[in-house]
Image (tube, rainbow, N blue to C red; front, side, top):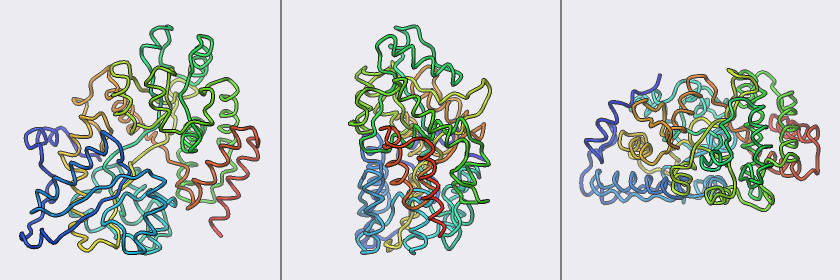
Amino acid sequence: MTIDRRELMKRAGVVSAGFAAGSQLTMSNAAAQEAELTVWDTLNSPPRSDIADTIVATFGEENGGITAEHRGWSLEELTDTLPRSVDGKQGPDVAQVNNGESLMGPMIRANQLVSLADYAEEYGWNDIFPEGLRARNMYSADGTKFGEGELWGVSAESEIVGFYYNRGIFAEHELQVPTTFAEFEALIAALREHGVEPIAFGTLDKWQAIHIFGELQGTFTTREYLDNLIYRRNDATFEDPSMLDAATKLVDWKAAGAFMEGFEGVNGDDAVPLFTSGMSAMLMQGSWAAGAVAEGLGDDAGFFLMPPHEAGGTVLHVGGVGIPYAITTNAEDPDLAAALINSFVSDDAFAQFVEAGILPAGEIAEDLIVADTLAGDVFSSWNNALAADAVGHYLDWATPDFYDVITAKLQELLAGEIDPQTFVAALQESYAASFE
C-alpha cells in the first residue's frame, strides 16, 4: 500500500513548516542547546540541497534550537568517506547509505548502522512504499541477506531513469515520443539525419554508462531474474541472455551515433547543461535531474521512459527508492536521529519535493499531476511504472565493489577494447568471487 498524499498535501499547504506526527520531540531548552545533529547525504545541488537545508534547519528550530547541520556530497565521495568516518567516530548521526552490497550490507556487518525496525513501527515507515520497493532498504539482522528482514534505511525520494527530451527540437523536426523500442531506434536515426545529437551522454566519471546499460538490459529481462540477481538468490548469474543482448545493443547504439560525439571526455553531470543548452534532443538521466532540467530548458522540457520492444510490453527501469537515510552508530541520540529522518518523509518535505518537480517517496496523487509539463511527465511515468511493477534495480547493488567493476568494463566495452561476451564474463567473474 502507499500513503494517500491528498490529505498530506492539504495539511502541508496549511502548515508550511509542519512535520509528520512524531517528528517533533519535547526537550528542555538546556538539552536542546547541547544536542548536535549532523546529516550527510547526496542532496548537494539546488533545488534538492535547498530542500535538505530547509528540512534540517527547521527541524532544529522546531525542537528547541538543536544544532542541526546538513552536508551534501557526491555519491562516490559519500560512499568512500562514510564507513571510515563512522569507524573513526567522526561521522554523522544520519546519512544516506546506498542500497544493497554497494554500502548498506557491508556497513551493517561492520556494526556501523542502527536497525530501524522499532522506529518503522513507531512512525509508520513501512507504509510509504509497497513491499517490493521497501525490500530494497531491508537486510537480515546480521547483514547477510539483502531484500528481507529489518528496515535499515528510509528513502525520502523515489527514483527512475529515463529520457528527458527537448519538445522544441522534436516539434521542429516533426518527431514523436517513441512508444516501442523500434520507434526509439528510428528516432535516433532521424535525429542524426537532421544533424542533431540524439543523446547527451558522458562516461568520463563512468556512472551514466551503468544506467544506460541497465535500461537496455531492462528491455530484455524479467522481474524474477533481476530480483534473484540483485538479492543474490537461487544461483542467479550474470551469464544470462539479457546481459549479452544489452551489451550488444549498447555497442550497436554507439555505432549508430546514439550518443553525442566526444562522450568519453564528458562527465555525467556535465551532460545536463549540454542538453539544456540545446546541444542534443535527449538526455539519459534519472528523475533527480528534473529540477536542473526544468531550470535550464523551461517549458520545452519533457520526459519519457525507455519503451518496450513490443507495444504493451514491460521494461524494468533502473530506479526504485532513493538512497535511504540511516542512523549510524555515531549517533549519540538515535531517537533524535530517527525523528529527523521522519522529517524527510513528512507532509512538508513531500510538498517541497513536489513543488520542485522532484519525485518524493511513494505514489503521486493524480490531482498533483499537471499534464504536458516536465514534472507531470516524470510523476506520471513513475506512477505507471509503480503500478506495473516495472521498477528494476541499480546493478551496482550486486556486490561491494561491483560499481567499480561494471563501470570500468563499460568504458572498455564502449571503447571497443572488449567485446560483449568478454564484458559479461568479467561481470560474472566479479559476482561469483563475492560469494567466496
